[in-house]
Amino acid sequence: MSLTPAGRFAPSPSADLHIGNLRTAVLAWLFARSTGRRFLLRVEDLDDRTFPEIGHRQVADLAAIGLTWDEPAQWQTGHQDRYDAVISGLFEHGLLYECYCSRRDIAQAPRAPHAPEGAYPGTCRGLTDAERDQRRAETGRPPALRLRTDTFVGTVTDLLHGSYTGIIDDFVVRRGDGVPAYNLAVVVDDAAGGVDQVVRGDDLLPSSPRQAYLARLLGHPEPIYAHVPLVLNQDGARLAKRDGAVTLAEIGVDRALEQISVSLGWPPLSVAGMLDRFDPAHLPRRPWIYQPG
Ligand code: GLU
Image 1: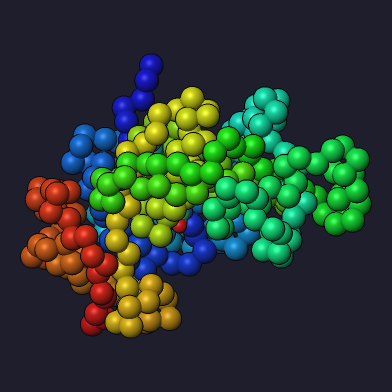
Image 2: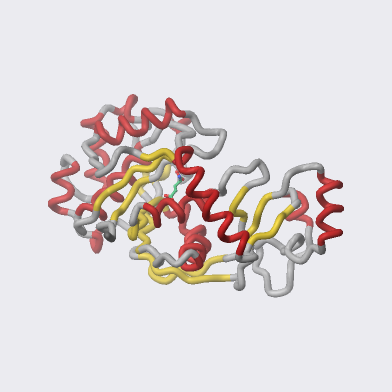
């Protein structure tokens, strides 16, 4: 039985959601519900800079503004078996290699021919067994696992950005500390949940060619992407907690909904009211400059 297609929102519980994150969540929900999709909520808690109590508050805040999802919220730490199975499969197909590079090694390595700026320079890609043993002994740290890709760039289609071309290098799928990397976990979970529509902040647009590549490699279709503009503070920088009065606890549900609705060009509305009017073609394309108060 195939799953009804879904959209999703996938916060990292490293800090409480601010008004910009809430607005992105509302947009993800509007895109999904206006197209008859299921909507999933996934707490991305693999990183050790995340905290369960923040995750629970994020889930509560999203419910408080009226969003609904079709299954209990999922937590990525509950999906370890799923990630392990995919990593083993890639390993068996010879598609992974061990990487001993530190960030500094990568920054200092000469760029590989044809590799774009910012791409992994390929230092560990062709190591012999003896060289690998030597690197292991020298660094004394467990290796990350990188995907052996066959290209340097890829293009995805985005509902707001059109055709976007970005780097696809040999990206990390499992970190040196054994934690599945963000790009792997997102792709595996989206595929497992039947997610075919990815709506998120446009700071993640550069990750999408890598994720689309991995999805295809694992036999999944590339999702529909919509990377929505971020929310900025009055200085034009990304909105952050230190800007003050940005979380739901600080703003209150009614005022937060009003601000989100007005930022999308509507009078103050509930999320159900926004759904009645939602038309992606009329979505503001510029960042929203947040005015507290
Ligand atoms: N967890 C990521 C974040 O909060 C978003 C992941 C995604 O939407 O693909 O930045």
